[in-house]
Length: 366
Image 1 (cartoon, rainbow, N blue to C red):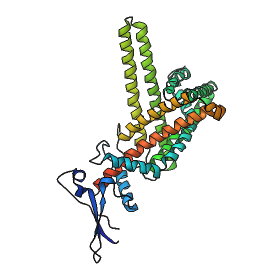
Image 2: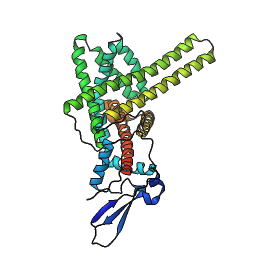
Image 3: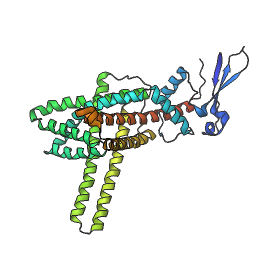
Image 4: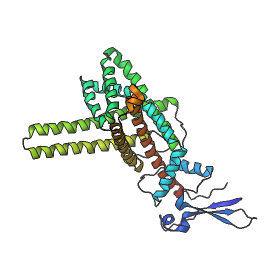
């Protein structure tokens, strides 16, 4: 079939016309003159631009996503949620996010101990007992990391800090920051795949960006853990200083609740930083909280708690993996972390793509 044009219906009276009028939610494909007059219809109510979409049209949509992102991802502009869910699932499989998450898990575990060493060293600039303080902070990671894997992390961290001397600190800190940035470099590659863009930054520029964002993320994680530690600290002070039992309980509860709220806000900020700096799109808009980040955070917490419960109930990993059992658990947790991070980005990108397809009403000639 030779097409004369792709005709997009217009309606200047309502921004939600395509969502409410079935005629406005369709694309009409008209054949060239000289052939039998026939019109084919692509229904937009069930697809962004038909399923499957022509490659040229796909490229046009993702160029719009890269150059003209939405200012708010919460405004779906009348696009049904089932469309977003359908295309998110399709893109998750097409982009091989399950394999990408496994890659992220490997790089995360590779960057873990350099990150801990770097954070402890930076904290040491302000406190002499930095390793002891950071050891207390890391205990709060056991909320999401299974205890068997967490004990391995703490033991390795303590061995690393105990073997560190002042002469090795400067060179070790630089090397640790460089090594820790490989985790964010892997995130950059993953989010470029999600947003269908190629990396145009030079290797040095991309790596320097990864190093800078890695330091920011380490500071955020440290503050998140410190807020939880601070909540427990003030709760203990309340029980020690306030002799009225009910009042002490109330103050301790408020202290812990506020610390969890603050930690949650910082966690959403961590996702926002990653989603803003990682993909190499032409234009970026800062979003404090996006639908993808909200689902990613909720999914990450549920997956982490589920893994903890599984390890606690089915405590037979040591029989299968022996001494590597704790490492396998930690790698699995990092895998789930990477998968939820990529899933949130995929949801955001599909919202952007659906909105871009709806905004674009220019005829496209093959």
